[in-house]
Length: 530
Image 1: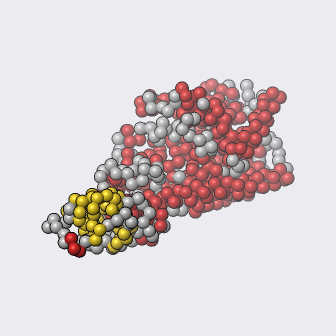
Image 2: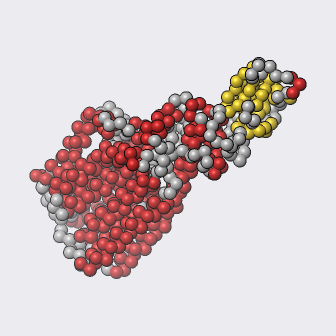
Image 3: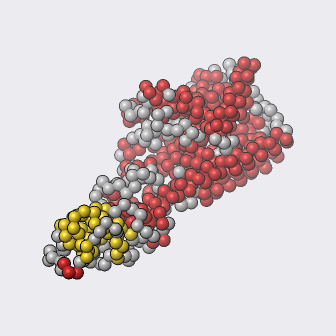
């Protein structure tokens, strides 16, 4: 039997100030993430929820998303659709920040009965400053992963306090957030077996049974696990473990490999000398190995093992493993000071990665908002399958988007008044959408133009203002037409426009008073501008 040595009771005076400090650190981390993530909007997978999860059928909640169960994230998004709609994204964005803060606070509560309150504050601090997990803590869609991690930690806290029913409920919650609940349930099962408490195996068995039923009903046959991906799983898992170890110190995977080797060496020495020593340590190791192994089997061929969304669970468990290795050790003031310095170093070292991801997301969000603003200026001109941005929002098509806007009564798009004030890159993309959708070539009224009023076009582009009635051309051939309305210059590739006799090139009318300019040149044949 692997025992759990009794942890020293922390002093009540320590409890008071360190609990207040842990709460303060968690609130500070929450506020910092909300501030750093300002300006981030709906991105990538979030659009799938907007378009496919607005109904109330069983499939709406139970269909997998990239193999993951997503019942609770879908429910949360649906509630926010009803309350906040699509016009503002901050209610969505505060969720991952709040979950991250909750994870840090729970790590403190788990650690303080093992290593004392001051050292537990260091452990919580390391988790709260893990900025290399940027994708999880800034992208609202990752509430599934973070929800599983927080609920899994709450299950461990409930076990520490002898609340078995609550531990089971927490594991079920973890399972309903994402498939990351599976490693936590396996870890709890290993912990109970290590304690030889087989009668309590129902705690992980209930969520695992529910997950199995869901998998058989909705996810069977949809797995990304193949023979090739499974063959690369071990190498992927090793690299993911190194990346997670590095993230705890705010460092890259290269430094993480060294830190991981040191941690494994300590574990091996301890195992040889006295066994693993605690059931909790056994459970934590099973949890993280299952996570890295299962993730590697599904993602080894498609995802970088150092991708930030795969770092939170591994980093948190590594911190808790270190806590278990130090269990019962009373750290002196010098050791605590070193820990505090490490927290500050880790936070500063990971800050560039966090801010870099935030700026990237803000840029993408601004571009998509401008593209959607241009789309909504001329909604009737867009085919249902038109994709405004295949790069940043490949799930988004004009038909689905306009249906969602109509259904929810709100939109994340830039308004006609906001488009002229957007960044130039955003305005350039708005012009690209208008060039694709609003540009029209129609026969001139009467079918004839006076040749004497027309001038031949060459290959050199001519910049002209577009009058309300459009530009008039005659001849036979093809034009190259570039469009500028909101941007500072012509940057998008010109569109080919055929000219067969008297032709008017015009733009669909909309609510914006900003005039169009066009850059026209002859791409072939004999074409004249009148």
